[in-house]
Length: 206
Image (cartoon, rainbow, N blue to C red):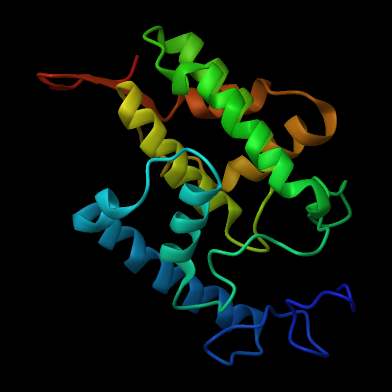
């Protein structure tokens, strides 16, 4: 626990939350239930209300929508440096805005991943996923925010992503990419969730 972390309830390792829960286990359960409800809401009708700006505005809007019931800082970028466990720190928060802007420009240069070849799309998605994961703009909820963001980008590029089989495995794949510059596991995992669609409807995965 970082005693200087303003996001924690004083004297605990639990994130400050709107539910006034001091138990990390109870918060995790409540957070999952509430964010899942918000995800369903997006899938049903509200996704089109989010900006398609592919930058800080879109990322913050997604994070706010998913976590608005749980954290009063939902939709706000982080204000402390963080790391996962004893691993390396993510990108410094002091450079966050510049990193997000650079990321957005890189994504535009890649034509927002509008790539018809499946293998090339997966490879570029892995690189972009790794960069955004390293930037890690939020105190909590980066993975869920990023997955929804990439699902939106992919859909506009002609691809459908189904994250359900691999969500828990992404942490290790992300660590390997961030700390060892090894994207092989991330590429493999993303390959299991990417399918393509055409006007006639979705096709089966390769």
